[in-house]
Length: 271
Image 1: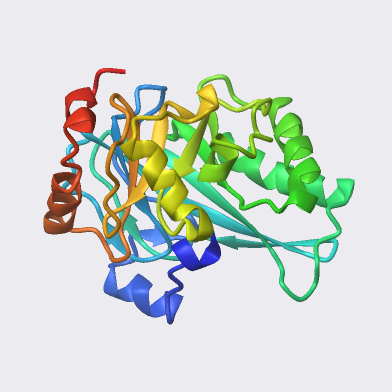
Image 2: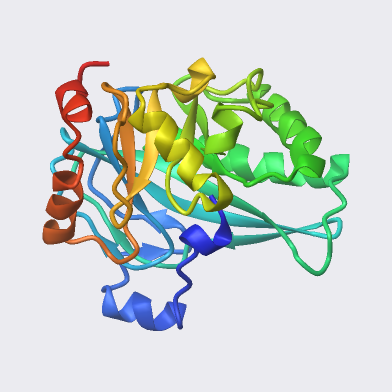
């Protein structure tokens, strides 16, 4: 998922803290209790870097994938930006911690073993926190960055908690033709079906004609946006929904209502 697709930077982090009642401090989410384990609901809402109040959600019907940290690869350095925006959660929320990795445009990352070790340590630290069911890595790795990404996944698996899934977001092309992720040691890959650029028409036509993704690892979940309906989704998927604005009861209902494809609706909760 590209930076253009998801990054919603706050104008001032401190102001948002005050407006939201300081529900969240430097990446620490306050909630009474959360459920850890693989039983993540079939609909998951992404909460990116913005104030979000999701306390109204039914935790039996919705999971929450929240941006936990952004890791910027800059030369041989790693710049860590934890979540600053407040996030209010329902009781017993099923949580997925999302880690966004970005390469600096002006100071190309070295992709050295030392830099990889720094990234691995940051993600592992998040994985060992309480109250999360999974970690989802969001990295639009260029071809020159793929060996780095593969080595990072392998390194993460060496000290990964057994009760936490390791998942990634994936460009749709990675799941269809450019299938370089086929042997990654991950539990799930989420094809992103919005802001697809040059692949948009090809991917949408493939789905409309009933064709599934090439890789099995891409056949469990899917990522959509509330402002880009997708026709022909395979049934029984876990579906992640991104919203360009803060969530509220009305926007959640509208987003779910847009998933009107008959095959998808009949498959909710069946896989």
